[in-house]
Image (cartoon, rainbow, N blue to C red; front, side):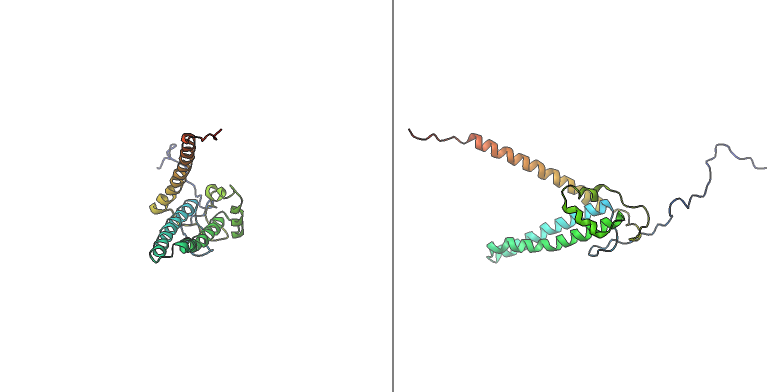
Length: 179
């Protein structure tokens, strides 16, 4: 004879509450198809930005070594074109993760609206744009952490530069006109 334990947790089949599908779609870096999560979006943008800095530095070094100092800036700007394309493609995939059309990434041109892409969660499970993105790797987490750190360093540096200019201006003697 089996006696039921009154302290035993309830057993219920709740598979219908949320899809138990564990399939993920791979991240496609150079495609407008697919989905990326918030952390992947931050991490991949930061990784692309670091590659942009590296590429612009290499192009600038080659231009300077070739004696084309005046055209080094223009060549560095050409190195930014792939990053801009990559950023747009990632914004489209991030919009897809929120179950929005890719055209909504045009809203990121409005100041402060782009923060929605950083803070709004994606739709759980599958949506009309496919399976969810894969779980975040350690590399993605580290790259995503680097972005706010660089932003904070930039803000502190800009404030320090402003104070340095004010201090320099205050120490410069004001010349009096001769009578």
